Length: 103
Image: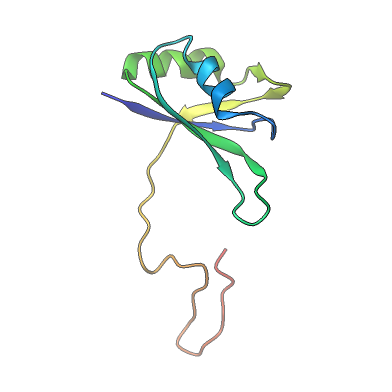
């Protein structure tokens, strides 16, 4: 079964292709995605890699977490899927109409 991994503290110049190459040493990579800021278009320094086999994904975590890649010490963990509900909008208001910032 496929396993999705979180990859953090990446170099802002890292490409999806180089990320895929790094993880393909451990098995089949289904997808590699880097997260970009929607306004500036600059990479945010983290992304996700989906590997076809769970055992190979766990091997990649053990081998790569804390190691240097393209000049940065990357973090590699199992990705945790977050549920996004209607109440988690970018700005939330109390009954009095005050903003809580949405952070």
